[in-house]
Length: 463
Image 1 (cartoon, rainbow, N blue to C red):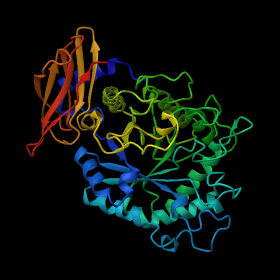
Image 2 (image 1 turned 135 degrees about the vertical axis):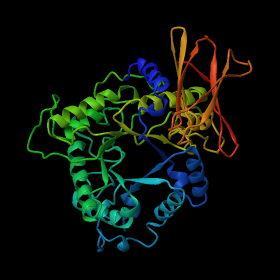
Image 3 (image 1 turned 180 degrees about the horizontal axis):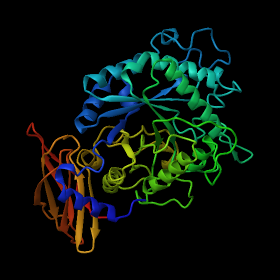
Image 4 (image 1 turned 90 degrees about the vertical axis):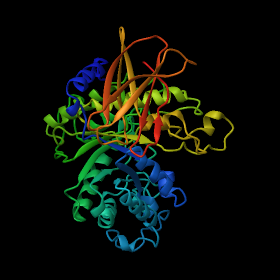
């Protein structure tokens, strides 16, 4: 976890060196909205919204099962799996349209090649996740690389391989087995992308879920297992060094908020990213993986109501900004992300907990109505109190140049907001300031875009 003083330290830098104040000026923002982006009826609207936010990359999961022929058969059909033209007619249509729409708006696309897989590509031929064949996966990766390689510069292998929904078995007799399975799949995917001419692209290792359970291998335990390291990060066996361009992780937290510190030291939420950087440093020193890897937070969001386990709408907006600030000031973090645009659709079930069993981390409700986090995502604002002062950090996401922003304040709920200060951001739209602390004071941001449109962030309390 970054120390709370990091915000105060950043503020000093912001005020002293406004032209070079961005702690993470090259850090990108990734957005994931699979339902809207792959649906022809909603794709353009979703891409327009994402582009208007100032987002520069979207992430798409390429579920092997959805593209392969005879995916539910135990017998592999006769076809050249390395040739994208040999796949069923229309198999690539949705992804093709997504690439075209993203390119038209100047948005990059990251692809994650992942399971579930065709049944014929598994060891048991009974399901779509148990011991996928590295050889067959290599062929699939080659096909995807040949079709999209000239339009992709950032790839990752497998979504949450430490979770049983995507890879099995996770454990056998209480011993973690998924890490070594994943290692072979990663190497196979890497070979496939090299065969397609994409060996020079950035390839991410990991894509791990944040916390372990009796069914899920904890992320750092998974990392050690996949890199053939013991608990002391010493190499075991004869595994070679993994060459990767970065480490991808899903640093979700709980309703406690971004500063939550999970008691299991092998868990990694947004508040304890230092655990991951330390683990990668030790693994690099041991020669098990490329040294000094950057961290790509490729999936993140805050669950809100109507999820019974989610936070209030006000807290969602507040927590998203705090989490983004944590990522921003961490020099190892190369990208942050938002998962989803709209909440998952409500399920038909008897209990409320079952009805909202998906993700309610969207900036809109499932039926489209905006949450406060929608405007907070455009104009994130993180505030912390330090004795008599409040320290504010924020950014105007749609602006990649210097711009002016108004900070508004209200002494208590129901009281009209007034202009506290008008300030100029740095060249990345980032700013910081200090204000006198009042117990019930709230802040919000107002920004006038170059086209004259006025944007207003939601009220935010100091944390």
